[in-house]
Length: 77
Length: 227
Image 1 (cartoon, rainbow over the protein chains, first blue to last red):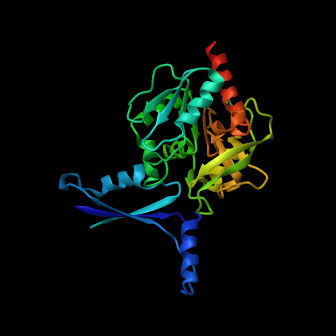
Image 2: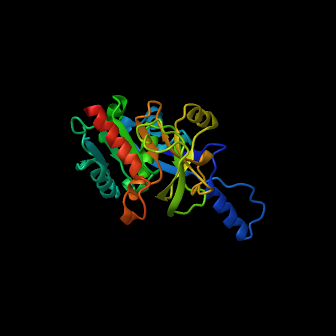
Image 3: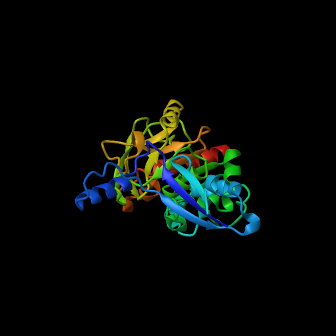
């Protein structure tokens, strides 16, 4: 079983990397880019006997996301 | 004093830390590998030094925070043992939940390696007892992820409880840290995390010794406690 985890910065947390990307897009002539936020995608493959969304959630809470600054979303593939 | 310095794969400042501790205590610290499940008996100071544990993968300090030895570090901290985390050590203490908040990418997106000014904003801690309240000291920084973040409620609480111990002073905030925070303690004041490196300014050959008082105060306090 496969899961895809999206880790994104919470609203209100400054994202200097996103801002740098936004600046670069502007410099390349892409107008109208009002905001860029950068995140991470983590793909996980689980053995069938260990596959459950609950376990993925535990992984996110324990290690994959820092919930002080980040949100996460799980997509079971 | 019996100190243990934790070494993770990618830690690289354990030597500077050991030298600073030897200078003030005359004793060698134990270097403890992160895979150990327990710290030596009788340790009264645990140090998480700087470096790039696990290559800063995922988030700086995130993987180190879950190394086997960290369970005993958390347990000893709960027992009141002194814990000092510098730079990557501060990041790991936050990731481990021993200190609140998180260290994010520097606002400039650049690795900063320079000297800053620090204001000592609380001297009623075992780490800062030999400084004067409000004293401004010199201290080097060297990091890419030193931008301290916590929600407004947590920041207010840290300030109300006098747990912000060091602040960047005189406009030298190198990383965009909220409220110029450079170092904080836990509620009990036995755990300190700070981004700057006091161990790198402890003798004339370093160009100054403003960091020395931190280690002197710490060691003297521990020696008094042991006596």
